[in-house]
Length: 233
Image (tube, rainbow, N blue to C red):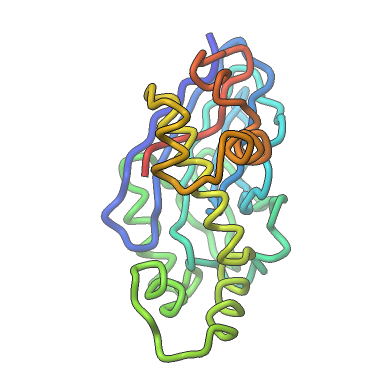
């Protein structure tokens, strides 16, 4: 009973994570903050739905359809679909029309539904046809490089490509790292030291805002309201 979630990394520079899940006997989850956007395909009672789920800046409860299966591609930071303005997707989503069990309609073309094992093939076609692009400056900065542009330009490119500021991305990703460490049994004081939190109250505020759980609740692994995808980076 609950929400079964499985995920894997990818060797594609455009993909952060590929995941799938199935719901059994749970009607609500805690959707934790994420700086990435996802293409999500879910099926319930034979009905297929496709959505683009934007970045989430806070944790919030979310309904879970009964006995549904989900598949998603979480895209790398800096990757976007230019025909869908990412800033309009922050804390929101866009429905993709005409979805069936075999295909859906995206930017004027029919696309076969991707699966857990062939997500990279699907994404390569997106790139080849110009549906998916990656900002090289954002990718370079995230890789540790210092591109020859002003800080203002970097900030503008981050906002345009991700819908978020660099500061917001850092805070969200740090909170997710902290949550993963706490679930592994790492003491809170060690998490504070490792990730640069000021003190216990600073960690607690971050956990509450971005994960929707306190360190104690994460350690207890309460499954009455499961968390959305959380993985160790």
